[in-house]
Image (cartoon, rainbow, N blue to C red; front, side, top):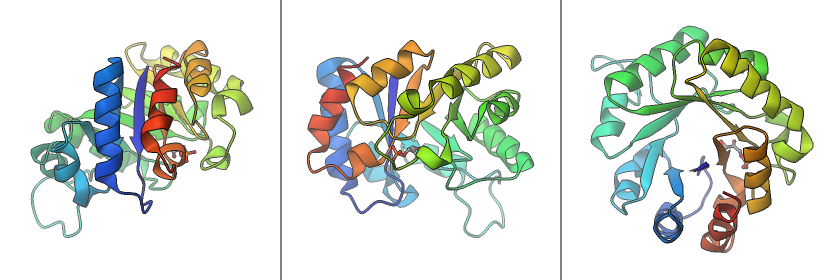
Length: 214
Ligand SMILES: O=C(CO)COP(=O)(O)O
């Protein structure tokens, strides 16, 4: 199970979380990545933790003010990128363009989706993985795998029907090792989470608990 911690725009210290994630990953052998604000990618990557962008633009180099280029985040140490997060939805053509831009820059990709139908559509675009995150459960206390196990199973089936090579992640409300274990039992290859770590007083102890569920 891959644990990806999305820091969103929370007012946490990205280096504190990155250092904790690096240390827990090294001690446990688990794969843990941190996805900070674009402006923090280089210094988060400098800690040695696996670093992901929260978004990349479909654009390539050129006259595109305000774009976060896949090439730029890769050059600054990112290994992968989220695309189409629930809090940063894109048009279908732009999801496709961002997946292609990430591919050009050798970034791994996870395309987020609200439900299994969107998971199937996202899988057709050829990302490395898709993630099902029901918006109503994001930021809450109950894990998607507990609140709605059927949506995880249906997402796994939807991706499998389109492209068995595309992994399925789930996210929303994940904060414990038990949540990670339950998600894995439902067929998820990993979890996305944010508030459980980004808002924690002691991110390292939350991460240690999370990896206990792998
Ligand atoms: O949106 C999420 C991860 O990308 C999930 O957020 P929470 O873990 O805060 O529910």
